[in-house]
Amino acid sequence: MSSSPPDNEAPRLLGFDVPDLQENVDQSEDEAIIAMLDVAPHAAWLALFNDRLDALKSDLGVAGVEVEGPSIRFYGSISDGRRLATAVASLINDVTLDYRSQSSARKVPFERPDPF
Image (cartoon, rainbow, N blue to C red):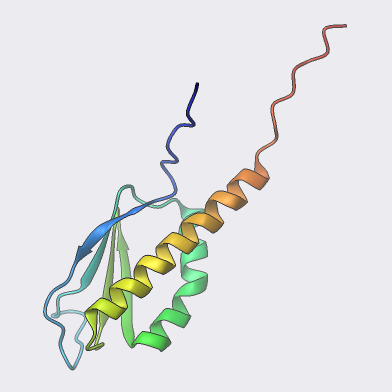
């Protein structure tokens, strides 16, 4: 039985680093909530992520987002870090599922050549 190789372009969430959150946000000085991924996301994954990011920003008071390799930094004045972490986890998982389904749709199934 063979298993499919891992998708090195579609990240999985490993966990979070959550500092004490501040009432007023200064992105240049404040610590961020960091979502730690298993791999750095591919450009197509990031495009899907960015398409959905505005809703998260407005719903949860996220002031800024920075992607650095396999880390995504979220800056915000939200008082409920757990709620933000849950929303970010959901966003990352949804984007990864969409990315994988779009990638699968683009792949052409292998066909054996006709021996005759």
